[in-house]
Image (cartoon, rainbow, N blue to C red; front, side, top):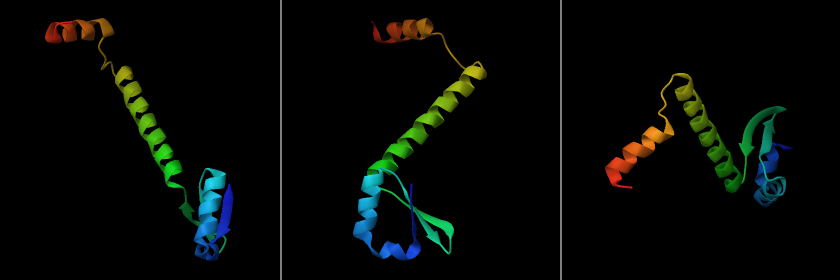
Length: 85
């Protein structure tokens, strides 16, 4: 984990290098307190994808808990009748 002071943001090439090396976020502080997070776009996209997947899993588990499910064989039969396979 990299932590840098706000004044170091002026050196954008160095920040980009650190993001690439860390393969994760760089935390920026102001007066000793966290203020910003800078990260490589690839890392951001991977993180957002994981969050989205976790949300979908959570929704699926909630559906399972609430009984909002259908047996696979019933779905297959219905799709087979509709699409002829």
